[in-house]
Image (tube, rainbow, N blue to C red; front, side, top):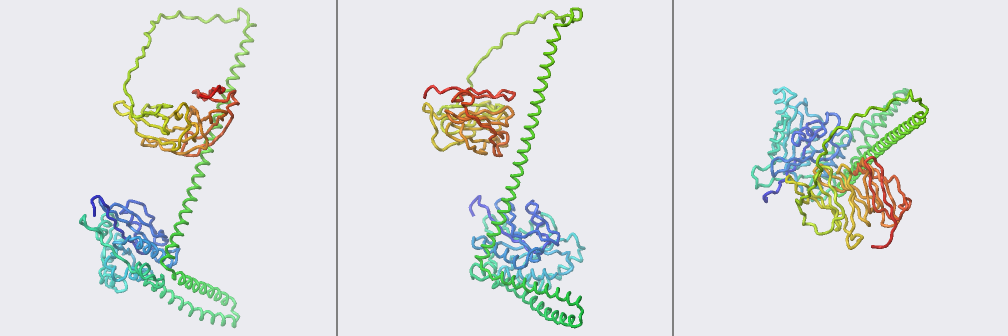
Length: 567
Protein backbone atom coordinates (compact mmCIF):
# COMPACT_ATOMS: atom_id res chain seq x y z
CA UNK A 1 0.00 0.00 0.00
CA UNK A 2 1.31 3.44 -0.94
CA UNK A 3 1.82 6.10 1.73
CA UNK A 4 -1.34 8.07 2.39
CA UNK A 5 -3.61 5.38 0.86
CA UNK A 6 -6.65 4.32 2.92
CA UNK A 7 -7.49 0.67 3.57
CA UNK A 8 -11.15 -0.32 3.34
CA UNK A 9 -12.48 -3.07 5.62
CA UNK A 10 -16.02 -4.32 4.92
CA UNK A 11 -17.88 -6.19 7.70
CA UNK A 12 -21.46 -7.50 7.41
CA UNK A 13 -23.78 -7.45 10.45
CA UNK A 14 -26.45 -10.17 10.65
CA UNK A 15 -28.94 -11.39 13.25
CA UNK A 16 -32.59 -11.30 14.25
CA UNK A 17 -34.46 -8.06 14.88
CA UNK A 18 -33.49 -6.40 18.18
CA UNK A 19 -30.27 -8.40 18.61
CA UNK A 20 -28.14 -5.24 18.93
CA UNK A 21 -26.90 -4.48 15.39
CA UNK A 22 -28.06 -0.86 15.34
CA UNK A 23 -26.69 -0.15 18.83
CA UNK A 24 -23.35 -1.65 17.77
CA UNK A 25 -23.30 0.70 14.74
CA UNK A 26 -24.04 3.71 16.96
CA UNK A 27 -21.12 2.83 19.27
CA UNK A 28 -18.71 2.62 16.32
CA UNK A 29 -19.81 5.53 14.16
CA UNK A 30 -21.41 7.97 16.57
CA UNK A 31 -24.39 8.02 14.19
CA UNK A 32 -27.88 7.34 15.51
CA UNK A 33 -28.90 4.22 13.61
CA UNK A 34 -32.57 3.32 14.17
CA UNK A 35 -32.81 0.78 17.00
CA UNK A 36 -35.42 -2.00 16.87
CA UNK A 37 -37.51 -2.99 19.87
CA UNK A 38 -37.54 -6.70 19.18
CA UNK A 39 -41.01 -6.62 17.60
CA UNK A 40 -40.80 -4.31 14.59
CA UNK A 41 -37.90 -4.53 12.17
CA UNK A 42 -36.17 -1.20 11.48
CA UNK A 43 -33.74 -2.28 8.74
CA UNK A 44 -35.71 -2.99 5.55
CA UNK A 45 -32.80 -2.70 3.10
CA UNK A 46 -29.07 -3.26 3.22
CA UNK A 47 -27.45 -0.06 4.53
CA UNK A 48 -23.76 0.86 4.92
CA UNK A 49 -22.32 2.91 7.81
CA UNK A 50 -18.67 3.99 7.49
CA UNK A 51 -16.24 5.38 10.06
CA UNK A 52 -12.49 5.86 10.53
CA UNK A 53 -11.21 2.99 12.68
CA UNK A 54 -7.78 4.58 12.89
CA UNK A 55 -5.75 6.85 10.58
CA UNK A 56 -5.49 5.06 7.23
CA UNK A 57 -8.23 2.49 7.96
CA UNK A 58 -11.89 2.98 7.01
CA UNK A 59 -14.35 0.37 8.29
CA UNK A 60 -17.67 -0.08 6.47
CA UNK A 61 -20.43 -1.78 8.52
CA UNK A 62 -23.03 -3.45 6.28
CA UNK A 63 -26.34 -3.63 8.17
CA UNK A 64 -28.69 -6.33 6.85
CA UNK A 65 -32.39 -7.07 7.55
CA UNK A 66 -33.16 -10.15 9.66
CA UNK A 67 -35.05 -13.18 8.40
CA UNK A 68 -37.66 -12.54 11.10
CA UNK A 69 -38.65 -9.21 9.47
CA UNK A 70 -42.20 -8.34 10.53
CA UNK A 71 -42.98 -6.61 7.22
CA UNK A 72 -41.29 -8.85 4.64
CA UNK A 73 -41.18 -12.50 3.66
CA UNK A 74 -37.93 -14.42 4.14
CA UNK A 75 -37.59 -14.76 0.37
CA UNK A 76 -37.60 -10.98 -0.08
CA UNK A 77 -34.99 -10.60 2.67
CA UNK A 78 -32.77 -13.26 1.06
CA UNK A 79 -33.17 -11.50 -2.29
CA UNK A 80 -32.18 -8.13 -0.79
CA UNK A 81 -29.06 -9.53 0.92
CA UNK A 82 -28.05 -11.71 -2.04
CA UNK A 83 -28.55 -8.83 -4.47
CA UNK A 84 -26.22 -6.55 -2.50
CA UNK A 85 -23.58 -9.26 -1.97
CA UNK A 86 -23.51 -10.31 -5.63
CA UNK A 87 -23.49 -6.71 -6.89
CA UNK A 88 -20.50 -5.72 -4.73
CA UNK A 89 -18.79 -9.00 -5.66
CA UNK A 90 -18.92 -8.08 -9.36
CA UNK A 91 -17.48 -4.67 -8.43
CA UNK A 92 -14.58 -6.41 -6.58
CA UNK A 93 -15.70 -5.24 -3.16
CA UNK A 94 -15.20 -8.15 -0.77
CA UNK A 95 -16.12 -8.67 2.87
CA UNK A 96 -13.42 -9.19 5.49
CA UNK A 97 -15.81 -10.80 7.95
CA UNK A 98 -19.33 -11.26 9.31
CA UNK A 99 -20.64 -10.49 12.81
CA UNK A 100 -23.70 -12.55 13.74
CA UNK A 101 -25.56 -11.04 16.73
CA UNK A 102 -27.55 -13.05 19.30
CA UNK A 103 -29.22 -11.88 22.53
CA UNK A 104 -27.87 -13.82 25.51
CA UNK A 105 -31.06 -12.67 27.27
CA UNK A 106 -33.10 -15.11 25.12
CA UNK A 107 -34.08 -18.10 27.23
CA UNK A 108 -33.71 -20.49 24.31
CA UNK A 109 -32.90 -20.46 20.60
CA UNK A 110 -36.14 -19.66 18.78
CA UNK A 111 -37.22 -21.18 15.47
CA UNK A 112 -36.27 -18.03 13.57
CA UNK A 113 -32.85 -18.13 15.24
CA UNK A 114 -32.30 -21.70 14.05
CA UNK A 115 -33.39 -20.76 10.53
CA UNK A 116 -31.00 -17.80 10.60
CA UNK A 117 -28.11 -20.10 11.53
CA UNK A 118 -28.94 -22.49 8.67
CA UNK A 119 -29.13 -19.64 6.20
CA UNK A 120 -25.90 -18.10 7.54
CA UNK A 121 -24.08 -21.41 7.02
CA UNK A 122 -25.36 -21.66 3.45
CA UNK A 123 -24.66 -17.99 2.69
CA UNK A 124 -21.05 -18.35 3.82
CA UNK A 125 -20.12 -21.86 2.74
CA UNK A 126 -17.50 -23.97 4.49
CA UNK A 127 -14.56 -21.85 3.24
CA UNK A 128 -15.79 -18.59 4.81
CA UNK A 129 -17.06 -19.86 8.18
CA UNK A 130 -13.75 -19.01 9.87
CA UNK A 131 -14.40 -15.31 9.16
CA UNK A 132 -17.68 -15.33 11.11
CA UNK A 133 -17.74 -14.03 14.70
CA UNK A 134 -20.78 -15.17 16.71
CA UNK A 135 -21.41 -12.14 18.92
CA UNK A 136 -23.57 -12.27 22.06
CA UNK A 137 -25.24 -9.09 23.36
CA UNK A 138 -27.39 -7.95 26.32
CA UNK A 139 -25.00 -9.34 28.97
CA UNK A 140 -25.98 -6.48 31.26
CA UNK A 141 -29.57 -7.84 31.42
CA UNK A 142 -28.78 -11.36 32.68
CA UNK A 143 -27.05 -12.81 35.74
CA UNK A 144 -23.56 -13.98 34.85
CA UNK A 145 -24.10 -17.65 35.78
CA UNK A 146 -27.27 -17.83 33.71
CA UNK A 147 -25.59 -16.14 30.76
CA UNK A 148 -22.58 -18.50 30.98
CA UNK A 149 -24.90 -21.53 30.95
CA UNK A 150 -26.75 -20.26 27.88
CA UNK A 151 -23.50 -19.50 26.05
CA UNK A 152 -22.21 -23.01 26.77
CA UNK A 153 -25.42 -24.51 25.37
CA UNK A 154 -25.07 -22.43 22.20
CA UNK A 155 -21.46 -23.50 21.67
CA UNK A 156 -22.03 -27.22 22.33
CA UNK A 157 -25.26 -27.72 20.37
CA UNK A 158 -24.47 -28.74 16.79
CA UNK A 159 -27.53 -27.10 15.21
CA UNK A 160 -26.93 -23.89 17.14
CA UNK A 161 -23.29 -22.71 17.12
CA UNK A 162 -21.51 -26.06 17.48
CA UNK A 163 -20.97 -26.71 13.76
CA UNK A 164 -19.69 -23.21 13.00
CA UNK A 165 -17.36 -23.10 16.01
CA UNK A 166 -15.83 -26.46 15.02
CA UNK A 167 -15.14 -25.03 11.56
CA UNK A 168 -13.31 -21.94 12.79
CA UNK A 169 -15.99 -19.37 13.66
CA UNK A 170 -15.10 -17.07 16.57
CA UNK A 171 -17.20 -16.24 19.64
CA UNK A 172 -17.24 -12.76 21.23
CA UNK A 173 -19.05 -11.16 24.15
CA UNK A 174 -20.13 -7.61 23.36
CA UNK A 175 -20.57 -5.46 26.48
CA UNK A 176 -22.58 -2.63 24.90
CA UNK A 177 -19.82 0.01 24.69
CA UNK A 178 -17.49 1.45 22.08
CA UNK A 179 -14.35 -0.28 23.40
CA UNK A 180 -15.99 -3.71 23.14
CA UNK A 181 -17.27 -2.94 19.62
CA UNK A 182 -13.85 -1.84 18.35
CA UNK A 183 -12.24 -4.87 19.98
CA UNK A 184 -14.30 -7.38 18.00
CA UNK A 185 -13.62 -5.44 14.77
CA UNK A 186 -9.88 -5.66 15.44
CA UNK A 187 -10.08 -9.30 14.25
CA UNK A 188 -10.54 -8.00 10.70
CA UNK A 189 -8.15 -5.00 10.75
CA UNK A 190 -4.43 -5.74 10.08
CA UNK A 191 -2.10 -4.54 12.82
CA UNK A 192 0.74 -3.72 10.40
CA UNK A 193 0.31 -0.64 8.22
CA UNK A 194 1.71 -2.30 5.07
CA UNK A 195 -0.56 -5.38 5.28
CA UNK A 196 -3.80 -5.52 3.30
CA UNK A 197 -6.95 -6.80 5.09
CA UNK A 198 -7.92 -10.39 4.36
CA UNK A 199 -11.07 -10.85 2.29
CA UNK A 200 -13.52 -13.71 1.77
CA UNK A 201 -15.73 -14.93 -1.05
CA UNK A 202 -19.09 -16.18 0.20
CA UNK A 203 -20.80 -19.22 -1.29
CA UNK A 204 -23.85 -17.17 -2.30
CA UNK A 205 -21.59 -14.80 -4.27
CA UNK A 206 -19.80 -17.48 -6.27
CA UNK A 207 -23.04 -19.40 -6.86
CA UNK A 208 -24.81 -16.37 -8.34
CA UNK A 209 -21.93 -14.54 -10.07
CA UNK A 210 -19.55 -17.33 -11.11
CA UNK A 211 -21.83 -20.39 -11.43
CA UNK A 212 -24.79 -18.34 -12.80
CA UNK A 213 -27.33 -20.14 -10.61
CA UNK A 214 -30.78 -18.80 -9.89
CA UNK A 215 -31.47 -17.90 -6.27
CA UNK A 216 -33.55 -21.03 -5.64
CA UNK A 217 -30.60 -23.18 -6.84
CA UNK A 218 -28.19 -21.74 -4.23
CA UNK A 219 -27.60 -23.36 -0.85
CA UNK A 220 -29.51 -20.64 0.99
CA UNK A 221 -32.36 -20.76 -1.53
CA UNK A 222 -32.67 -24.54 -1.10
CA UNK A 223 -32.96 -24.12 2.69
CA UNK A 224 -35.90 -21.74 2.27
CA UNK A 225 -37.48 -23.93 -0.41
CA UNK A 226 -37.25 -26.99 1.84
CA UNK A 227 -38.78 -25.07 4.76
CA UNK A 228 -41.65 -23.83 2.59
CA UNK A 229 -42.21 -27.27 1.05
CA UNK A 230 -42.52 -28.79 4.52
CA UNK A 231 -44.95 -26.07 5.67
CA UNK A 232 -46.89 -26.36 2.43
CA UNK A 233 -47.25 -30.14 2.81
CA UNK A 234 -48.39 -29.74 6.41
CA UNK A 235 -50.98 -27.14 5.40
CA UNK A 236 -52.28 -29.29 2.55
CA UNK A 237 -52.74 -32.23 4.96
CA UNK A 238 -54.62 -29.95 7.33
CA UNK A 239 -56.75 -28.74 4.43
CA UNK A 240 -57.89 -32.32 3.77
CA UNK A 241 -58.92 -32.67 7.42
CA UNK A 242 -60.73 -29.30 7.37
CA UNK A 243 -62.69 -30.28 4.24
CA UNK A 244 -63.81 -33.50 5.97
CA UNK A 245 -64.81 -31.51 9.06
CA UNK A 246 -66.84 -29.08 6.90
CA UNK A 247 -68.60 -32.00 5.25
CA UNK A 248 -69.46 -33.53 8.63
CA UNK A 249 -70.68 -30.20 10.08
CA UNK A 250 -72.88 -29.63 7.03
CA UNK A 251 -74.43 -33.10 7.32
CA UNK A 252 -75.15 -32.48 11.01
CA UNK A 253 -76.57 -29.03 10.10
CA UNK A 254 -74.09 -27.30 12.38
CA UNK A 255 -73.91 -24.27 10.12
CA UNK A 256 -71.98 -22.12 12.62
CA UNK A 257 -69.17 -24.67 12.78
CA UNK A 258 -69.27 -25.14 9.03
CA UNK A 259 -68.86 -21.39 8.49
CA UNK A 260 -65.89 -21.20 10.88
CA UNK A 261 -64.24 -24.16 9.17
CA UNK A 262 -64.78 -22.59 5.75
CA UNK A 263 -63.07 -19.38 6.93
CA UNK A 264 -60.17 -21.46 8.26
CA UNK A 265 -59.99 -23.31 4.96
CA UNK A 266 -59.83 -20.02 3.02
CA UNK A 267 -56.99 -18.72 5.22
CA UNK A 268 -55.04 -21.96 4.73
CA UNK A 269 -55.52 -21.74 0.95
CA UNK A 270 -54.15 -18.20 1.00
CA UNK A 271 -51.12 -19.35 3.01
CA UNK A 272 -50.42 -22.13 0.51
CA UNK A 273 -50.71 -19.63 -2.36
CA UNK A 274 -48.31 -17.20 -0.63
CA UNK A 275 -45.73 -19.96 -0.27
CA UNK A 276 -46.11 -20.84 -3.95
CA UNK A 277 -45.57 -17.19 -4.91
CA UNK A 278 -42.51 -16.92 -2.65
CA UNK A 279 -41.02 -20.06 -4.19
CA UNK A 280 -41.60 -18.56 -7.63
CA UNK A 281 -39.82 -15.36 -6.60
CA UNK A 282 -36.66 -17.35 -5.79
CA UNK A 283 -36.35 -18.38 -9.44
CA UNK A 284 -34.37 -15.25 -10.32
CA UNK A 285 -30.87 -14.72 -11.70
CA UNK A 286 -28.22 -12.37 -10.35
CA UNK A 287 -29.00 -9.88 -13.12
CA UNK A 288 -32.68 -9.86 -12.15
CA UNK A 289 -31.74 -9.33 -8.50
CA UNK A 290 -29.60 -6.35 -9.49
CA UNK A 291 -32.41 -4.93 -11.65
CA UNK A 292 -34.92 -5.29 -8.80
CA UNK A 293 -32.52 -3.61 -6.38
CA UNK A 294 -31.89 -0.77 -8.84
CA UNK A 295 -35.64 -0.27 -9.30
CA UNK A 296 -36.10 -0.09 -5.51
CA UNK A 297 -33.31 2.45 -5.20
CA UNK A 298 -34.86 4.59 -7.96
CA UNK A 299 -38.21 4.42 -6.21
CA UNK A 300 -36.62 5.51 -2.92
CA UNK A 301 -34.86 8.39 -4.68
CA UNK A 302 -38.15 9.46 -6.27
CA UNK A 303 -39.82 9.43 -2.85
CA UNK A 304 -36.97 11.45 -1.34
CA UNK A 305 -37.11 13.94 -4.23
CA UNK A 306 -40.89 14.30 -3.84
CA UNK A 307 -40.45 14.90 -0.11
CA UNK A 308 -37.74 17.50 -0.80
CA UNK A 309 -39.87 19.24 -3.43
CA UNK A 310 -42.81 19.32 -1.03
CA UNK A 311 -40.62 20.77 1.72
CA UNK A 312 -39.21 23.41 -0.63
CA UNK A 313 -42.71 24.33 -1.77
CA UNK A 314 -43.81 24.73 1.85
CA UNK A 315 -40.80 26.90 2.61
CA UNK A 316 -41.42 29.09 -0.44
CA UNK A 317 -45.09 29.43 0.48
CA UNK A 318 -44.17 30.46 4.03
CA UNK A 319 -41.64 32.95 2.67
CA UNK A 320 -44.26 34.44 0.34
CA UNK A 321 -46.69 34.70 3.25
CA UNK A 322 -44.02 36.38 5.37
CA UNK A 323 -43.34 38.91 2.62
CA UNK A 324 -47.04 39.59 2.13
CA UNK A 325 -47.48 40.11 5.87
CA UNK A 326 -44.47 42.41 5.95
CA UNK A 327 -45.84 44.34 2.97
CA UNK A 328 -49.22 44.72 4.75
CA UNK A 329 -47.46 46.07 7.83
CA UNK A 330 -45.48 48.52 5.71
CA UNK A 331 -48.62 49.69 3.89
CA UNK A 332 -50.45 50.12 7.20
CA UNK A 333 -47.50 52.05 8.59
CA UNK A 334 -47.46 54.28 5.49
CA UNK A 335 -51.22 54.93 5.74
CA UNK A 336 -50.93 55.82 9.43
CA UNK A 337 -48.02 58.13 8.70
CA UNK A 338 -49.94 59.79 5.86
CA UNK A 339 -53.03 60.18 8.05
CA UNK A 340 -50.96 61.73 10.84
CA UNK A 341 -49.42 64.18 8.37
CA UNK A 342 -52.87 65.14 7.06
CA UNK A 343 -54.14 65.66 10.61
CA UNK A 344 -51.16 67.88 11.44
CA UNK A 345 -51.77 69.89 8.27
CA UNK A 346 -55.44 70.33 9.21
CA UNK A 347 -54.45 71.56 12.68
CA UNK A 348 -51.95 74.01 11.19
CA UNK A 349 -54.57 75.32 8.75
CA UNK A 350 -57.12 75.80 11.54
CA UNK A 351 -54.56 77.54 13.71
CA UNK A 352 -53.68 79.89 10.85
CA UNK A 353 -57.35 80.76 10.29
CA UNK A 354 -57.97 81.45 13.99
CA UNK A 355 -54.89 83.63 14.59
CA UNK A 356 -56.19 86.89 12.87
CA UNK A 357 -59.45 87.05 14.94
CA UNK A 358 -57.75 86.85 18.34
CA UNK A 359 -57.96 90.14 20.33
CA UNK A 360 -54.75 91.96 21.19
CA UNK A 361 -55.40 91.47 24.89
CA UNK A 362 -55.79 87.77 24.51
CA UNK A 363 -52.81 87.36 22.26
CA UNK A 364 -49.90 85.71 23.94
CA UNK A 365 -46.74 87.75 24.29
CA UNK A 366 -43.91 86.77 22.00
CA UNK A 367 -41.67 84.13 23.56
CA UNK A 368 -38.54 85.35 25.29
CA UNK A 369 -35.41 84.70 23.32
CA UNK A 370 -32.18 84.51 25.29
CA UNK A 371 -29.17 86.32 23.91
CA UNK A 372 -27.06 84.26 21.57
CA UNK A 373 -24.03 82.90 23.40
CA UNK A 374 -20.58 83.76 22.17
CA UNK A 375 -19.40 80.52 20.65
CA UNK A 376 -15.92 80.22 19.31
CA UNK A 377 -16.07 78.86 15.76
CA UNK A 378 -14.03 75.68 15.49
CA UNK A 379 -11.30 75.48 12.97
CA UNK A 380 -12.35 74.10 9.60
CA UNK A 381 -11.69 70.41 9.04
CA UNK A 382 -8.82 69.84 6.70
CA UNK A 383 -8.78 66.89 4.28
CA UNK A 384 -5.64 65.05 3.43
CA UNK A 385 -5.35 62.26 0.85
CA UNK A 386 -2.54 59.74 1.19
CA UNK A 387 -1.78 57.02 -1.36
CA UNK A 388 -1.31 53.81 0.63
CA UNK A 389 -1.73 50.98 -1.91
CA UNK A 390 -1.80 50.21 -5.63
CA UNK A 391 -3.21 47.08 -7.23
CA UNK A 392 -1.26 46.25 -10.37
CA UNK A 393 -2.52 42.72 -10.94
CA UNK A 394 -5.53 43.74 -13.02
CA UNK A 395 -5.01 45.42 -16.39
CA UNK A 396 -8.61 45.63 -17.61
CA UNK A 397 -10.68 48.76 -16.87
CA UNK A 398 -12.91 48.72 -13.76
CA UNK A 399 -16.51 49.73 -14.43
CA UNK A 400 -17.67 49.63 -10.82
CA UNK A 401 -16.26 49.60 -7.27
CA UNK A 402 -18.06 49.10 -3.97
CA UNK A 403 -17.08 48.37 -0.36
CA UNK A 404 -19.04 46.12 1.97
CA UNK A 405 -20.45 48.05 4.97
CA UNK A 406 -17.69 46.84 7.28
CA UNK A 407 -15.00 47.86 4.78
CA UNK A 408 -13.43 44.40 4.87
CA UNK A 409 -14.18 43.58 1.23
CA UNK A 410 -13.93 45.57 -1.99
CA UNK A 411 -15.97 44.42 -4.99
CA UNK A 412 -14.54 45.39 -8.41
CA UNK A 413 -16.38 44.85 -11.70
CA UNK A 414 -14.05 44.39 -14.70
CA UNK A 415 -14.39 44.56 -18.45
CA UNK A 416 -13.13 40.97 -18.76
CA UNK A 417 -16.31 39.11 -17.83
CA UNK A 418 -15.62 38.68 -14.13
CA UNK A 419 -15.79 40.25 -10.67
CA UNK A 420 -12.79 40.52 -8.34
CA UNK A 421 -13.30 40.33 -4.58
CA UNK A 422 -10.56 42.02 -2.52
CA UNK A 423 -10.21 41.26 1.21
CA UNK A 424 -8.45 43.47 3.75
CA UNK A 425 -5.68 41.89 5.81
CA UNK A 426 -4.54 42.80 9.34
CA UNK A 427 -2.16 45.43 7.93
CA UNK A 428 -5.06 47.19 6.20
CA UNK A 429 -4.01 46.19 2.66
CA UNK A 430 -6.39 44.64 0.14
CA UNK A 431 -5.61 41.55 -1.93
CA UNK A 432 -7.67 39.41 -4.30
CA UNK A 433 -9.25 36.44 -2.53
CA UNK A 434 -11.89 35.42 -5.09
CA UNK A 435 -12.68 35.75 -8.79
CA UNK A 436 -16.36 35.42 -9.76
CA UNK A 437 -16.41 34.14 -13.35
CA UNK A 438 -19.68 35.50 -14.66
CA UNK A 439 -19.77 34.99 -18.40
CA UNK A 440 -17.98 32.86 -20.95
CA UNK A 441 -19.26 34.56 -24.11
CA UNK A 442 -18.07 37.92 -25.41
CA UNK A 443 -20.04 40.91 -24.12
CA UNK A 444 -21.38 44.05 -25.77
CA UNK A 445 -18.62 46.62 -25.88
CA UNK A 446 -18.89 50.33 -25.55
CA UNK A 447 -15.84 52.39 -26.55
CA UNK A 448 -13.87 49.17 -26.83
CA UNK A 449 -14.60 47.92 -23.29
CA UNK A 450 -17.20 45.54 -21.88
CA UNK A 451 -19.56 47.45 -19.60
CA UNK A 452 -20.35 45.66 -16.31
CA UNK A 453 -22.45 46.75 -13.33
CA UNK A 454 -22.50 45.46 -9.74
CA UNK A 455 -25.12 46.33 -7.10
CA UNK A 456 -24.69 45.39 -3.44
CA UNK A 457 -27.38 44.77 -0.85
CA UNK A 458 -27.04 47.32 2.01
CA UNK A 459 -25.75 44.68 4.44
CA UNK A 460 -23.07 43.57 1.94
CA UNK A 461 -24.18 39.91 1.98
CA UNK A 462 -25.54 39.76 -1.58
CA UNK A 463 -24.42 41.27 -4.89
CA UNK A 464 -26.23 41.43 -8.23
CA UNK A 465 -24.04 41.39 -11.34
CA UNK A 466 -24.98 42.13 -14.94
CA UNK A 467 -23.78 43.53 -18.25
CA UNK A 468 -25.70 45.09 -21.10
CA UNK A 469 -26.27 41.82 -22.94
CA UNK A 470 -26.04 39.33 -20.06
CA UNK A 471 -28.59 38.02 -17.57
CA UNK A 472 -28.53 39.18 -13.95
CA UNK A 473 -26.68 36.84 -11.59
CA UNK A 474 -26.95 36.83 -7.79
CA UNK A 475 -24.05 35.95 -5.50
CA UNK A 476 -24.44 35.44 -1.73
CA UNK A 477 -21.66 35.47 0.88
CA UNK A 478 -21.49 32.29 2.95
CA UNK A 479 -20.21 31.85 6.50
CA UNK A 480 -16.58 31.69 5.34
CA UNK A 481 -16.83 35.05 3.55
CA UNK A 482 -16.90 33.50 0.06
CA UNK A 483 -19.42 34.66 -2.56
CA UNK A 484 -21.33 31.83 -4.28
CA UNK A 485 -23.82 32.12 -7.14
CA UNK A 486 -27.38 31.33 -6.00
CA UNK A 487 -29.54 32.10 -9.02
CA UNK A 488 -29.76 33.70 -12.46
CA UNK A 489 -32.66 35.98 -13.42
CA UNK A 490 -34.28 35.87 -16.85
CA UNK A 491 -33.49 39.52 -17.68
CA UNK A 492 -30.49 41.70 -18.54
CA UNK A 493 -29.67 45.02 -16.89
CA UNK A 494 -27.53 48.07 -17.68
CA UNK A 495 -28.13 49.80 -14.31
CA UNK A 496 -29.42 48.44 -10.98
CA UNK A 497 -30.20 49.69 -7.47
CA UNK A 498 -31.08 48.07 -4.13
CA UNK A 499 -33.82 49.33 -1.81
CA UNK A 500 -32.61 50.52 1.65
CA UNK A 501 -34.08 47.46 3.38
CA UNK A 502 -32.44 45.13 0.84
CA UNK A 503 -35.70 43.40 -0.10
CA UNK A 504 -36.12 44.90 -3.59
CA UNK A 505 -33.78 45.09 -6.58
CA UNK A 506 -34.65 47.55 -9.36
CA UNK A 507 -33.08 47.01 -12.79
CA UNK A 508 -33.25 48.80 -16.13
CA UNK A 509 -32.97 46.65 -19.25
CA UNK A 510 -31.44 47.51 -22.62
CA UNK A 511 -29.61 50.63 -23.69
CA UNK A 512 -32.51 52.16 -25.67
CA UNK A 513 -36.27 51.84 -25.00
CA UNK A 514 -35.65 49.60 -22.03
CA UNK A 515 -37.87 48.59 -19.14
CA UNK A 516 -37.72 49.36 -15.42
CA UNK A 517 -38.28 46.14 -13.47
CA UNK A 518 -38.83 45.66 -9.72
CA UNK A 519 -37.74 42.33 -8.19
CA UNK A 520 -38.71 41.15 -4.70
CA UNK A 521 -36.50 38.77 -2.69
CA UNK A 522 -33.05 40.41 -2.90
CA UNK A 523 -32.76 39.73 0.85
CA UNK A 524 -33.34 35.98 0.34
CA UNK A 525 -31.21 35.12 -2.72
CA UNK A 526 -31.40 31.38 -2.04
CA UNK A 527 -35.12 31.52 -2.94
CA UNK A 528 -36.38 32.45 -6.44
CA UNK A 529 -36.86 36.21 -6.84
CA UNK A 530 -40.27 37.49 -7.95
CA UNK A 531 -40.78 40.25 -10.52
CA UNK A 532 -43.55 42.41 -9.03
CA UNK A 533 -43.67 45.40 -11.42
CA UNK A 534 -42.48 46.49 -14.87
CA UNK A 535 -42.75 49.80 -16.76
CA UNK A 536 -41.24 51.17 -19.98
CA UNK A 537 -38.52 53.79 -19.56
CA UNK A 538 -40.47 56.14 -21.85
CA UNK A 539 -43.19 56.14 -19.17
CA UNK A 540 -40.83 58.41 -17.21
CA UNK A 541 -40.24 60.81 -20.11
CA UNK A 542 -37.20 59.48 -21.95
CA UNK A 543 -35.81 56.61 -23.99
CA UNK A 544 -32.73 55.88 -21.83
CA UNK A 545 -32.33 55.62 -18.05
CA UNK A 546 -28.87 57.03 -17.38
CA UNK A 547 -28.85 56.89 -13.56
CA UNK A 548 -30.90 55.56 -10.66
CA UNK A 549 -30.68 55.70 -6.84
CA UNK A 550 -32.72 55.05 -3.67
CA UNK A 551 -33.13 57.50 -0.79
CA UNK A 552 -32.78 56.30 2.80
CA UNK A 553 -36.58 56.27 3.22
CA UNK A 554 -37.18 54.15 0.11
CA UNK A 555 -37.85 56.76 -2.59
CA UNK A 556 -36.46 55.92 -6.03
CA UNK A 557 -34.91 58.61 -8.24
CA UNK A 558 -34.50 57.79 -11.96
CA UNK A 559 -32.90 60.04 -14.60
CA UNK A 560 -34.52 59.52 -18.04
CA UNK A 561 -32.77 61.06 -21.05
CA UNK A 562 -33.13 60.99 -24.82
CA UNK A 563 -30.60 59.31 -27.10
CA UNK A 564 -28.70 61.99 -29.02
CA UNK A 565 -26.39 59.78 -31.04
CA UNK A 566 -24.16 56.74 -30.96
CA UNK A 567 -20.88 57.00 -29.06
